[in-house]
Image (cartoon, rainbow, N blue to C red; front, side, top):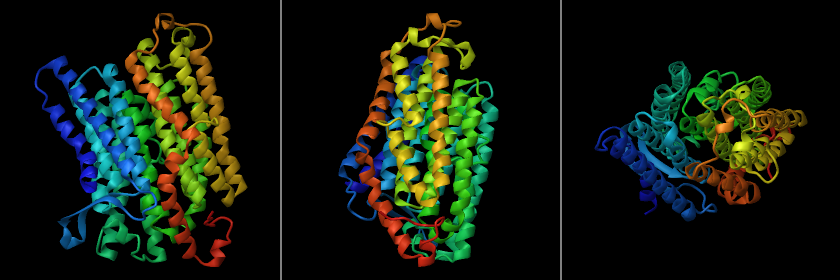
Length: 506
C-alpha cells in the first residue's frame, strides 16, 4: 500500500488535469465544472498526503513509500521514487497550498478557467514528482516540467507585462537547468548510474565536487533565487495571477533551496565547505538588498515579491551554515515562508480585486471597510516579520543559532531581515489599512465566505507552526542530524576547528 499511496498522490492531479481539460459543455458552465473537479481533486490529494504523513516513521532511516521500476536500466537510470523527512514536508506544503490557490482564483481568474485548472494540477503533479524523485534524471524531468505550467499561468492569465515576465521566467530557469544537465551527465559518466542514494556514496574527487557544486549552484540559484540571479522574480511575482504568485513564491521557489540541500549540502560535503563563505555572503547581500529595494516599492505585489526574495536569502544562509540548527531552521523557514507569503498575496488580491489597483498610494482606510481582512492581514504581516508565536520566528531563530557557529557578524547581518522587514511591512500595513479613506475604498466590502475558507487555514497553520514547531521538525530533524554527524566524521580535525567551515553538532 505504501508505494501505491505515493504514486496516487503524484499522479492523481495529472488525472484530474486530463479530466478537467476534457470537461463537456461550453463557456462558463464548462469552466465551473472544471473548477469544482480541480478543487475536489486537490482536496483528495491533500487528504492522501496527510495519510502518508500519519504513516511516516521519522525514526526509520532511509526512504519510505519507495517505488523502483525498470526504465533505462542499461544506462543505470530507473524510475525510483520515495520520501524521507525532507521530501515529506514539501509534499505536504504543496498539497496544502494547491487547493487554496485554486480557491483564491475562483473569481480572479475569469477567462479560460478550465485551462487554468489543468495548468495548476499539472504543476502540482510536477512538484510531487520532483520532491519524491530518487533518480537524478527523473528529478530533472519533473524539475523541467514545472516550467511549462508556470510559464503558461504567467503568460496567459497575468497582468499587462505578462509576456515579458513569462519570457524572463522561462529563460532564467531553463538556462540554469542546462548547468544541472551538464552536472547530471558528468555524474553519470563517473558513477555509471543516476540513482541519488547511490550517488551519495559515489566518492567524487575533491576537484570534481567543486565543479559539480558550481553547476548545481547556478541551476538552483536561479529558482531560489540567489543574488544576483533574481532578475526574473519581481516581474514574475507581480504579473502572475494571484494563485500562480502563491504557488511560485510558496512552493516553486523552494525547489531551488531543496535542490541546493540535496545536491549540495548533503551530496558534496567537501566542496560545500569551500563554497560556504561565498554563498553566506550572497545570502546576506540578498537579505539586505531586497529589504532596501522593498522600501522603495509603490506596488503592493512588488513589495511582497521583494520581501520573499529577502527571506529566501535567509534560507540560503541557514543551509550553508552547515550546522544542524541552521539547516533545520532553513527547512522550517521554507515551510513557514511558503504559508505566509501565499497568505500575503491572497490578502493583497482581496483588496486589489475590489479596489482595482495594486498601487499603495491609491489606497487607505481599508480597515474601516474590511475589519476581518485587517485582522488576518495583521497576523500574516507579523508572521512575515518573525513575531514570536508564529512559524517564521522559529525558522529564523534556528537559522541565527546556526549562523552564530559560523560568525557573529553573519548572524547580526542576517538578523537584519527581521528589523528591516518590520519597517517595510508595517509601513505597508499602515498606509493601506489605516489613514484616510481614498478613492473607491469606501465602497469595499469585507471578505466573503470563500475568501475566509482560503485565509483561515493559512492563519491556523501559521500559529500552529509557531506554537508546536516540533510537529514538523521531528519529521526532518533526525535525517539532518544523521547527515551532519556523518559529514563531521569524514572531515579532518583541522577543518572541524575552522570557525568558517565548521560543521557543528548538537
